[in-house]
Length: 153
Image (cartoon, rainbow, N blue to C red; front, side):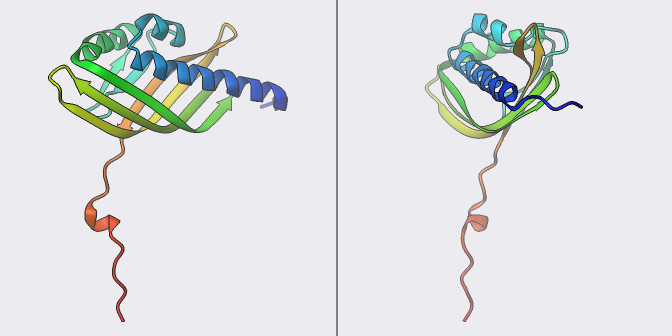
């Protein structure tokens, strides 16, 4: 594989990072029109979510149906990602990091989680568009593992 000029890769990373941020903004809004600008909206798109009891949604129609039924259950829904790494290999890029989500259901119940997030983008028509998203809950460490064992004397 030929190497890309460093400047071009840096610009591509900025575009991918911006697309990734736009995804979380649209997800939190909730804004389907914005989602349609971020994704390729194709039959090969895949969403594995929500982070708890995840289900696989294959194809843009299934992904859209998922959000249209999921979003209305919340009064507040906010998700963001702290990006750990952006990788680019030809026309494909993947972003992984730690997501933080906060939810308040219409019933008043609140919850939050930290998730491992992975997003895959494809370079199409001079744009980086999302083709895949997966979120997996980071389990809380049991108290026994968090405690530092006492030293024996």
